[in-house]
Length: 148
Image (cartoon, rainbow, N blue to C red; front, side, top):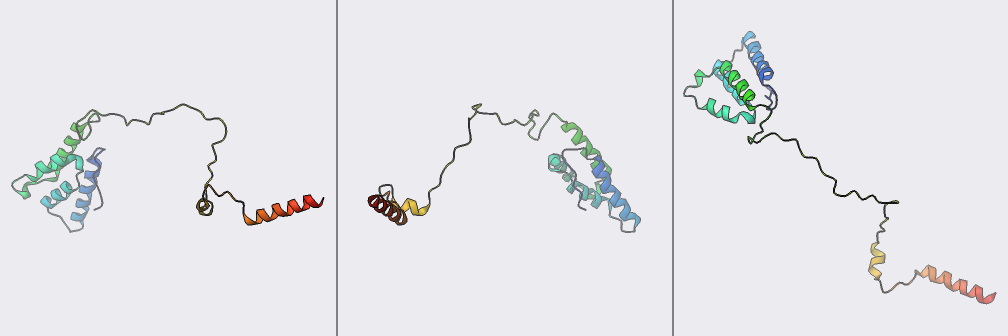
């Protein structure tokens, strides 16, 4: 029985689905005793009805449990909860939306942030020497200027 009674909607339809399953089992000659049906129904009640579950579990005799009584109590508990109450008995409030902190609009494209590689960061800021191939090109350019 993978049926779970939801805590945010009317439990009548789901409880009826569970009870129909018990009726089908009885029709196929695999009847479940009434007190076991009631206990299975109690185990399917949602967390929001934990007070109801505790009051049902305090009965003296387990054989006195009836599915109709549990169904009636679950429906009454759901109706008493109402749409204006939450779990903590605080008034219902709409979830707050995030507020915009700043209305500043940036002009132009976003700034480009360059990343440094490990090779350039290990040389340090003091030694800004060009690469060896660049030095060679500079020397060649000077020689060509002298010869002109």
